[in-house]
Length: 147
Image (cartoon, rainbow, N blue to C red; front, top):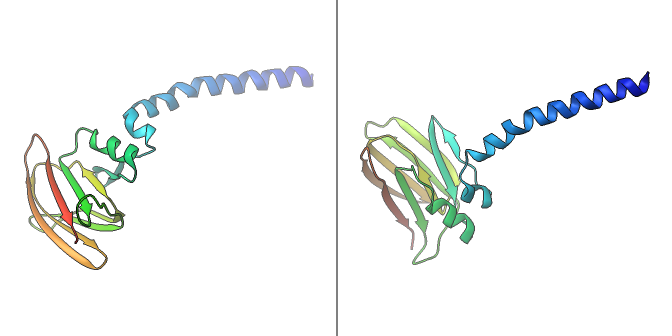
């Protein structure tokens, strides 16, 4: 009797595992392969998708090859000296908060809707501010450089 029970349990577990495996694989397939390879995750805040990272060539290339992000931010300290640990606050032109992120960089890509935004970036106690207008198509790039 124990053998039959054990066989039934094993068959049930195998069926569950095989039945759930396609769902797990499908979730992984929705993320671009370059992001998976670089071990990056698409994040969300207030319904806004974003990517942050770019430390190392794999991460940097994966983010730069990602499509669908209307705002591309780059943080550096001189030519080619990218920095991490930047605090970013993005608000609409009317002051409504959109994204508030801490310790990001050196790249930040965000999928914001068309509109006008104010981007504040702080690094090592130094703050910079930029205004940007995003259209319905294409993307805009902003570079924040602390020398």
